Length: 219
Image 1 (cartoon, helix red, strand yellow):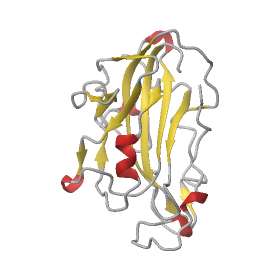
Image 2 (cartoon, rainbow, N blue to C red):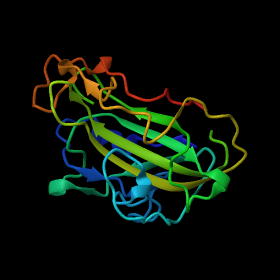
Image 3 (spheres, rainbow, N blue to C red):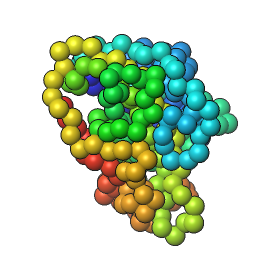
Image 4 (cartoon, helix red, strand yellow):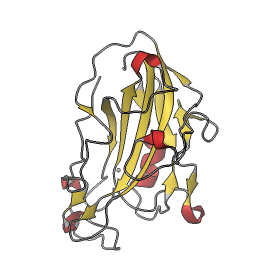
């Protein structure tokens, strides 16, 4: 399985693409699912992400994904009708194997390994898995300088996927949510020369940005 980021990066890396958003659509080889068909509702406590979520809407259909397929997420709603992201910032994709392949009752509180990262395109603008049943997590966030008194803004969703095929390899570099990130971690809190939300785009050094969490597992 290969992470599919093209649809996301077109929004992530263009400064003019703005809008608070949710990622309610799963992409498999470029084919879009119905909204929330496989993706857990962001209101659900089962997302296990920064912030407070209510409800328990986690009994989702599970998408069958053949080994070697491309998968990703698509923004299904954005504030003010914009098709992309409101705040510039990185995108990361994680996976977590459900214990006993029981996705329906899995809270996502196990081990997560990173399979993709989309970072800056340049200094001024942002850019095979073992078979089984997994949560596939997308996180896009706006990192902030230490001088701000509020926390980074996070936009997170998780989809149910069933990886089919011979697979192989052993994932490494695990994370847990919550627990892996702290607000003051590098990559979540950044220096002012990496901050572009105030409309200042000249003289930035975004290629120096390092994302939080473990390294991407290459398979």
